View 1 (cartoon, rainbow, N blue to C red):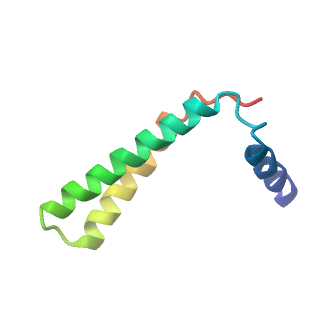
View 2: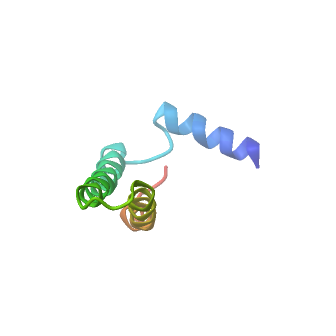
Length: 74
């Protein structure tokens, strides 16, 4: 299992794992921005910091599979 993971990581960093890297990074950045905006918004509401981090992490974690569902592998 570790061998497969290591091979996938090497292909990713060589740029040979994902077909359209631009779309992958665009979706990744979009999810990051949504999570960051949610964290900042909850922070401005003066909610407990740990609660704000937990909520924004959960929402971002649930959003990422939806954003990355159309990623094509080579």
